Image (cartoon, rainbow, N blue to C red; front, side, top):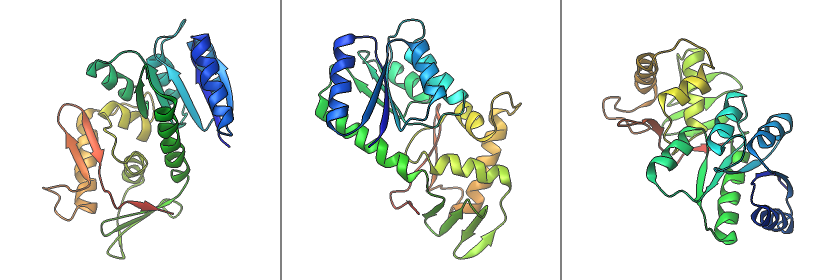
Amino acid sequence: MARILIVEDEPDLALSLEEDLRRQGHQATVARDGAQGLELGTSSSWDLVLLDVMLPKMDGFEVCSELRRAGATTPVILLTARTQEAEKVLGLDSGADDYVTKPFSLRELRARIRAQLRRGSRETEHVFHFGECEVNFDRAELRRSGQPVDVTPQELRLLGVFLRNRGRVLSRDRLIEAAWGNGTAITDRAVDTHVFNLRKKIEPVPSAPRFLIGVRGLGYRFEDEDLTNS
């Protein structure tokens, strides 16, 4: 059973989501506006947040950004009637994990929820394997082909952000927030330098990266279909 927060101001939709989640065996709580959603999201522990974009008092983008700024790592699925690509990018850049466009079927939403809950359970693990590398966060250790690799604590934190967000494009601002913290005077160029150094330590051919992929105009993405953790 998962604890799921629904932040939705449309009464009929909120009730439908709440009832369906409970039929699936989950515990569901509804917040009726953005301010209440943020308060509940930061004051309790949740396994997932379903977050409408068009909300009274505070929109979903702002709620999501504030949740991430407060240190919440709970998966967030945005619900919106907006279909423009720019809106989707804005939502993902605010820290959301997925984006579902209204109208949607409950069947589709259930599948998205299951995927995020599976992902959330994996993120509690601390040992990752990809390519010839093994990363053990409990031991603060990086090994390549079985041999220890010198890695700074900051590089390890940054690598952890990438590993726990496999397949997601992360902007430099998002990386700074997640790996360094808010209010840190880190430039985009400093992020690029850390990524460059990480590539030298994990990539078979650093000049042709296989894992840490640059996405022009957006940021970086960690990509490896064979990534495992335990």
